[in-house]
Structures are given as structure tokens and as C-alpha cells.
Length: 352
Ligand SMILES: C[S@@+](CC[C@H](N)C(=O)[O-])C[C@H]1O[C@@H](n2cnc3c(N)ncnc32)[C@H](O)[C@@H]1O
Image 1 (tube, rainbow, N blue to C red):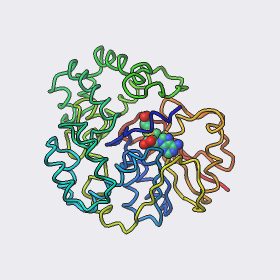
Image 2 (cartoon, rainbow, N blue to C red):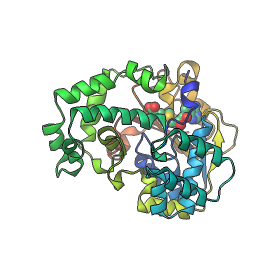
Image 3 (tube, rainbow, N blue to C red):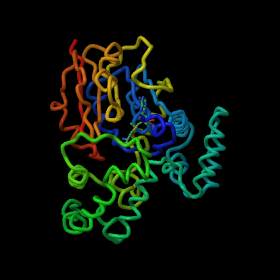
């Protein structure tokens, strides 16, 4: 069911704030990490802790190419050049920086294909998911002036600004138009959208998530800037691998990731990971695999190791959690600061 949707380049920036997983890895002092790849923003920051092993798995070959390319830009370019590469609207500049990189031949057709198909669009926004939210921002622009959409990020109290200038009839109307299954299926998922089992209505789910988000450090939220402004307008809102601290740590990390195309639930290696980051992949599961995915991973989880789920609209049902303990409550301080706020985070610790 999810095969068609996940085979394309769907994510180029990030639709999660991986600072959450990064802080967890630091706190747990994890050394062996297995992660779903996505845009790379959810995988590359782990290099900053110099893990013994980082295995990045994705079903989509294009996502893996993008991740490898992102890492090469961090390794080979200065931070300012890397940011220019990912954010420039000038295709000649993007191509000139690409041509400076020493790369395997496999990157060229991938890069040129997307460059040609996205004239004037920086690589950071090449993913289908990013384009969907750029479309969302066009609706936002019709309903709210620039002084509101950009002003909220500069306000001394953004939540108060949101309550006074954004929250209300127009905002509710926008969330009702965009935040529903039919709209997401037509814009992005082509029928593969999640089968929601959250007790909340779509409207309450999204309204509540945005309400929590406006209370946080929104200048750092790429997601909110994408929704309101159609792009990241503050440098601190760029995905965390572009922050000065993480960029330099990733650049200097001696760890080289292992890339693997395929399903994260099909493991043949002997490694015992102490951190497994699944994104919201489990929310798309159904049937036997929805019941068994934790047990499929169990043999590759070290004792005391952690599996991190981000449920989106759907928490997995009837899943066999034997041998694992739900410790999510112990990490609420870290979870509650996540800067996308669309996910219900579940942390499972292997107890035996
Ligand atoms: C789950 S998606 C993120 C979805 C996003 N949060 C959303 O709501 O649309 C993250 C990445 O997981 C990959 N993916 C999907 N199923 C997978 C699987 N079984 N194993 C490994 N990667 C998978 C996708 O290709 C994508 O790059």
C-alpha cells in the first residue's frame, strides 16, 4: 500500500524536528544506531555523537541518494557554501557548487533530473512533501498578510501574537480546508494516506498541534515557517544539521554511515543497536506487520536499547510489545519541545 508513495523523492528538508532524537541519543549515550533515512535530517545529525555504527535505511533509492549528497556537501563545503547549495534560488549557482564536489558518478543524473524539473526551486524544497506545504502557504498568504505571517516569528511573545492575529475563524477555515484525508491524498499521498485511528477529529488534531507549536521556539521551526511563509525565513529554522554546532561535528565525525535500501523491518545483520529511530513508518503499517514489527526488530536491539516511534494520526494497534517497556513518560521534557508537534512519540525500552 505505501510502496508507490514512498518510492519517490518525498522529503528534501525534513518534516520532523530531529533535535528530539539527537538529544535522546546524547542522553542515552547510544553507540550503535539504526535509523530510517527520510530527508537525511532525521539521520545525519546522529553523526555528531560519533557513534560506532550508524545504519541508514530507506525503501526509496532517491531518499538515500539525497542523504549521501547532503553528507558530501557537509564534508566537502564550508557551512556557508553548503547552505547556499541547499537554499539558492539561482540554478546556475546550485549547479556550480555541485560541480565543485568530488562525487561518485551516480549523483549526477539524480541531481540534474531534479534540477531540471525544479527550475528556481532550491534543493531544500525538491521533495513532494515540501511542495505540498508550499502550496499550503499560498492559501495562508491569501488569508493573512505578510506582517502577520512573518511578524509572528519576530514577536516578543509569539503565542500571544498568534492568539491575537492568527487563531480564529480564518485559521480554523484554513485547517479545515487543508487538514483532511481527501486533500492530503489528492495533493501528496495518492491514496496511501494514513488510516487514522486517533480519537481526535482531523481538525482537533491539527488545531491542537499548531496551538502547542506556537508556544515553542518557533524561529527554529522549519515546519511553521514553511506553512506560513513557504520557505525557511530564519537561518536558525534550517534543519539542525545546518546549525553551526552540528554542522562542524558532522563534518569532523570519523563515522561513515552504512546506507541500505529496503525495509527497516527486514534485518539480516547481527548488530545489536541501542537506538532505533523509526520515524512515523509504523503509522503506515497494517495487518501482520503492524502486530509484529517490534518483534521483527527485537533480535537487533541491545538489552536496555530504545525504539523511538513517531505516531502520526495512527497509533499502531494490537502490537506485540513483549520484552519492551513503554518509557515515554520519563522523557516528556525532551518530547514536548519537538518543533513540528504533529506526532505522538513513543519510546520503548528493551527490558530483557
Ligand atoms: C515515514 S516517512 C515520513 C512520513 C511523514 N512523516 C509523513 O507523514 O508523510 C520517512 C521515510 O521513511 C521511508 N520509509 C517508508 N517505509 C519504510 C520502511 N518500511 N523501511 C524503511 N524506510 C521506509 C520513506 O521512504 C521516507 O523517506
